[in-house]
Length: 312
Ligand code: NDP
Ligand code: GO6
Image (cartoon, rainbow, N blue to C red; front, side, top):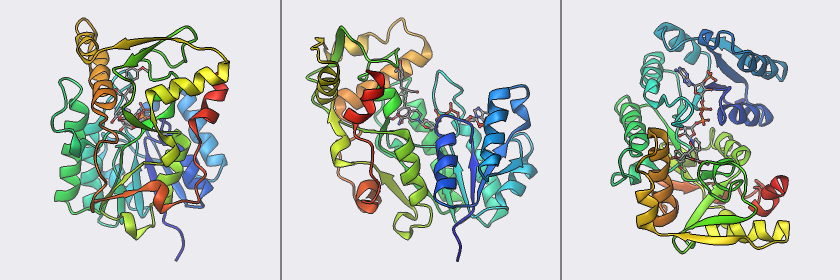
């Protein structure tokens, strides 16, 4: 039996393009949804054409044409959706309900990966407003998947390095500070941070793996479960300079939400759960989950001291 055929929905997005790359690299026949709505977005079109050059198949289809989704899904064995879930980009998680319906109707899909790739929404029932919308919506999608009895894997539980390491976890910037750094509380909560390309590699590895069928794939690569303090230390060593550390208490951090726009408030809530509660790591992985670096020890994941070098 050959490798599963994969359809990537959201393939030109930040995570999606990495999923396409990893799928091609691991030898899966790779299909990418090409939406007419991209219109004059020449960057998206050029990216799609580049995928095609590398061997991907482009499939035309639109979320406003249900049959086109069914037809696209019928071409493959596995669907990976990387729909936007980022509030300052184009949050659209609930659109996936149409895709779930199409997968149900097509009836041929042996694994669906909805757009997750973050905090486990099943563990965020207590999350703060308004950021909880992220988790509530992902849970609505999960329920539809499970009601439709579609086989799934939920890929959860890591912060993207580009949003959490490159900036030493500072909000409102993607670059590391060189003078002073805000430290969340004691700076000792454990946070899992994974290079986005590694997340994609692990995700593709799991496609044909029965161990992750109907399970959640978590990330605890031992060397990438870090505290903010450790991350800052790595950066200080790289640039050969100590930064001024400014501690922000839980209360002050939460209070900073006032006066922010909606996307900012969503972000503060997420950072609060990650850095004050330790929500990425404060639980044991039970029978419903598997840990990626244990399943695939052969993956040489990027260490954050290496990752940070490019920012120096
Ligand atoms: P992007 O913002 O890059 O968007 C991905 C794709 O969503 C787009 O490329 C587009 O697909 C599709 N899309 C957006 N709007 C529409 C629409 N109206 N109709 C159809 N398709 C649409 O997403 P990310 O890669 O940033 O996010 C992917 C997932 O990763 C989300 O679930 C998010 O929550 C999670 N995430 C996790 C982070 C972490 O630190 N753990 C950090 C950031 C995100 P097309 O290619 O077809 O144009
Ligand atoms: C990433 C961010 C960075 C927000 C998740 C505001 C869903 C998740 C780890 O979109 O809000 O500056 O789990 O000013 O389940 C955003 C979100 C991070 C990026 C968190 C995310 C992580 C979404 C900011 C900012 C760098």
